[in-house]
Amino acid sequence: MTTGLSAEVHLVRGAFELSVALEAAPGEVVAVLGPNGAGKSTLLAVLAGHLRPASGTVRIGDRTLTGTGVAVRPERRSVGLLGQDPLVFPHLSARDNVAFGPRSAGASARASRATADEWLASVGLAGLEDRRPAELSGGQRQRVALARALAARPSVLLLDEPFAQLDVRTAAELRDLVRDQVRRTRTATVLVTHDVLDAVALADRVVILHDGSVVEQGPPLDVLTDPVHSFTAALAGVNLVVGTIVVRPDGSAALVGPDGVEVPCVGAPGPAQVTFGPSAVVLGGPDGWPAHVIDLEPGVTGVRVRTTGDVVVDLPPAEVARLDLRVGAAVRLSVPAPLVRVRRLP
Image 1 (cartoon, rainbow, N blue to C red):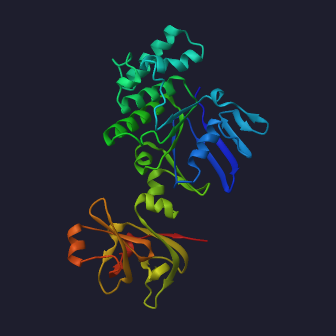
Image 2 (image 1 turned 120 degrees about the vertical axis):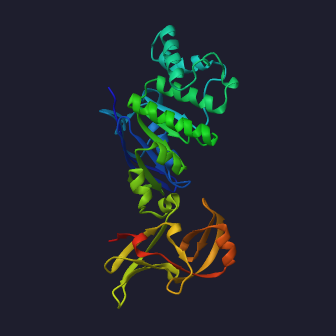
Image 3 (image 1 turned 60 degrees about the horizontal axis):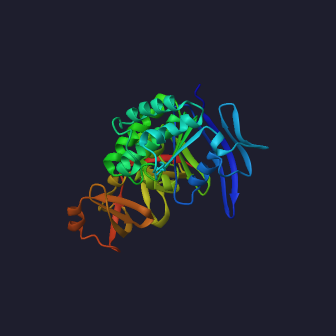
């Protein structure tokens, strides 16, 4: 029977405080993202049983792993862990590495090896069962580690930056593989990552951690299209400006933000935040707000121009050269109101 994960934990380590509520349903991948120091690895350590929170609970189905007077040891939690370093046994073959979990659970040697062969085939390593880790590529070792984690039939799978050290093609293949295997086995999965591509390609839901707290969560498309927090906006590559909507005498409205930012929008007066893409920003024109170039960075499609108010603009390299944009240069920016998303603030 497949079971889901439910956790609500509070932990204090020195000046850092972690307070998180998290759920992962059977077969669901929940991606946890956040800046360095946000508490992602600490959260995984609590879920795995390596750290005990000051208060709260961790449950798999109806089974309490962490709670008042309860602290189930990591090896008895039915939790698998796959990190960026494939921690396979170097002296064992791929088959024996994967057979380790079933064998430890009491299966016979013959049955464990048969199970291992099935899992190795399912992760694309049929024919490589007898090879030791030193004879495999990094991507192949990570496949062995994934097969070993899932062969133990964990109720929950924890992924800690599992694709960080892989090349682009191998990482893409393993994302597809993890997604397919998690769906097939109905394993509740928590993925900690810095890479927004992991969330887009693999996750059913994303949770954004910042300073130990959840600042937003939801389906990847919803969170990345209309972010609430500045970290998420930067992750999604969109501009986010917080300020106050004012209505001009002519009836037009604009959000007035820091450093003279004035974004045309539709809405009633009051506190709000707006989001808009860097490609939506128009550089030049008499009706824009005044700004200065803070930095010029490589962009996905050309050059990303960062300006005062932390508004970024994406431009083709030829346009940057034509305008002779340099750090400190004065510019005027505008955004068409229909391309601006508005979120009211309390």
